[in-house]
Image 1 (cartoon, each protein chain N blue to C red):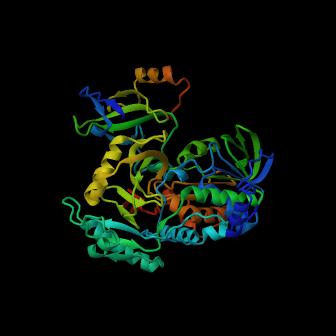
Image 2: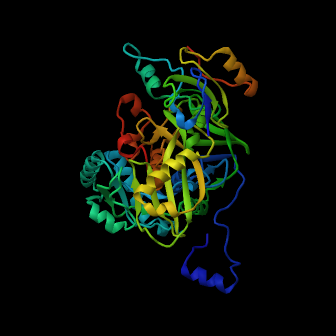
Length: 414
Length: 109
């Protein structure tokens, strides 16, 4: 792999950009791998990357039924934050956020991480108390957040209307080191680094069956033939129930559609990320100038990767009160992704009833921010059988009653 | 937009008039059941790619709960039926079989 650098840009400029190589190889599957990861989204590729980087396991295949990063990795609103209430959540999301900080250097791929700061607006008395509590919890967890008053919110977000009639802004939870990153670049960067370590990323290769023998996984059937493996990692978000069924166990997950939309590009007007959880809306401005807007999920089981217009209406209606200028914007695009939601709104990184088969799922509406931390923990779990970061996220926690309840703090909007 | 016909008042209601209530025909487990049964009842759901039986409430209409059979891959609605049953009626099953031969669901109780 040729490294990207300022020198490389200059060199290629002198020879009409004929020297760039493919970012990752496009191999045919081998008969056997040490590890197969199903799902070449951010979480799957990060898992493969840290298996190689931290544990030296490079005989790895990452299988993808569609195209790389074409699922929720390419459909989210790119927000990165770690201001969670519960300790296990704060630990893994903060790990992820800290890995984002030097990801571009680590991967030699510009993921455009922009720690511009994230505000979660408090618009009811209940939220004021909730976010003050979260700020205190974050102080104990070593996550840097603070409670800020309305005047400071206005200073950070000049376009905001503090005195909305229904939902006045009463303050906010401010995480200065939160922000955004280029979502596609995260997947592409990991893919390029994995490929450089000799891993095979096999696209348009759908898993059609999971083979096991004596309660132990031995391989998968795919549209490109059967492939053997010692260990299997399922990292397929909205399709995890479907895949786990092939392996013969069930997951406490339901799949629903979450959608987002972007406006036409406008001049810079907001240089932080603002989330308004009471009204189910969040917004940031991309480097292209588009206002990136996310809303709530549909209430029913859905695999269609489409949104619904009445949810757009609800989201935009809510945002217009808080950001009056939104009413003059034209919206360009709208899309949906299928998110896998668990009972306590926390993810599952876990061993399964099938030996050597591991699952990473249930990130629901907030998976993008967790990609590096999730991959780090999943790789550790798969390589060593134990990961301190993933310990609390076992799928057994539902039976044991050890929930990581983020549904109140984060269940609506990530 | 999803349109379901309320089996009680006969209104063809749009999604905004309704509230989704999750998977239908769950068998309830309470005191005296095993940990596994209680766990499955509380948290495990079918979450199929395809035929799904679910509960809906006609929340801004007659206010009543009812059942619907729907495809989660296409959003096609196979039919709606009363809530006073623990399994879908035969005509709903036939309607599904006509469009999705070989469909499956866990045991109805």
